Length: 275
Image (cartoon, rainbow, N blue to C red; front, side, top):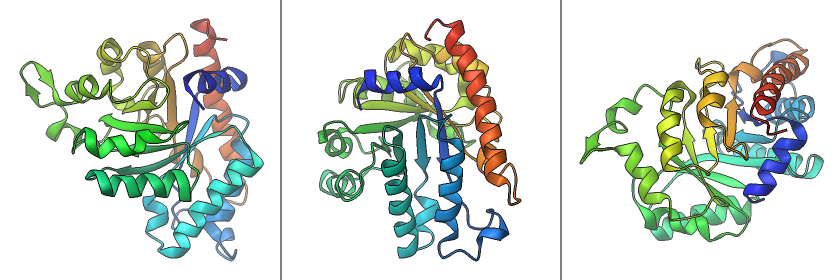
């Protein structure tokens, strides 16, 4: 799926919602714990109830790695379920990988060949040669960390050197590593006002925006500062959808929460004459 394909999917669903499948075994409804694979059952029901409102899903691999080999099986089974039942939905491995070239090559093989993810999040700290192996796969995306939503972002990302903050340098240097068809950036919603300046550096690239919902980011601010003429945004919500209800009706509540976000997104798309 290229840049235009992603925009077409957004136009069809009138949504730029990405749902983070940060499926914590300790938080899922106790009624599922008797299942053979409780997290997979939870994921399936979340996906079945929200797929009409989401253009992307983003499993955070830490929640699966923490369970050992069975967790990897759950991750692969979740990916296969989405690809089989709901083809066309964009699936992101939120893995935050990044290492020397030959190691990154193996990470890229893991997520793009062994598993069939559409995109993977990558840390830029080790430079271009650590990112390049991920960009060798046609139709696949690198989502590069630029400006994150956590408190610790202040430790390094705002460091100013020669008139450029570190996150600005990441954006400027990496812009020619890929194209708008295979490279997007993570920009936290809790830093939404920064999007205005970020758009001056990367005016066309898609941005993956976490932090809306449980972290307090404003969807309205993200839309105001971040929307492009082809949307250019995937806004992620995880906990606010996944764990809105811990009863047997959790999937129904998740659908309601996703629909609320989709309706707001639709209004922003319409206001910007994108649908």
